[in-house]
Length: 206
Image (cartoon, rainbow, N blue to C red):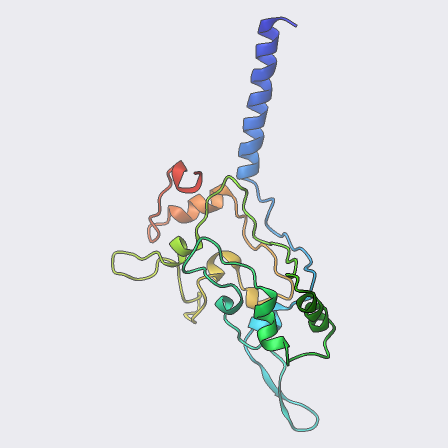
């Protein structure tokens, strides 16, 4: 193979790699991702709103959720880059005495007894070449000092700012990726007049 042929082949392969990378960046490959976790934890039950009903005995029972805030289990989103996954100790704050007749709680307790972390499967996992800081987004304020991310839903009801990107997790039994989480989706948000965030490459690629 001549030098010119080698150069053309390398140029073709490089072009193909760049086009592939761009296609991936603007694709929706993450949307709908719904991995099964090692423990069948229901966000709908734990984080959903309580729904009280009267059973056949005339007792008032909660058939909804317990309204646990996101930041009880996912600490630090307002203070650091990562929201963090809950440690076994956080789970055992409640489940050392609650739900010990449940199979998933007993399984969780096995991890605790062995001194092992629960191997949660990360759902919202951006590529390594993307820099994302939770605190920068959650603490962003406009010129009037109001949060840039909405803290009420379309009907005017209060909502965690987390829902902007993660959707209504409190209504999910199995958490799934609700949005594309690709480059175009991020840029569309950064370009909104009420957001006015940087679209420079260095903002997300460091």
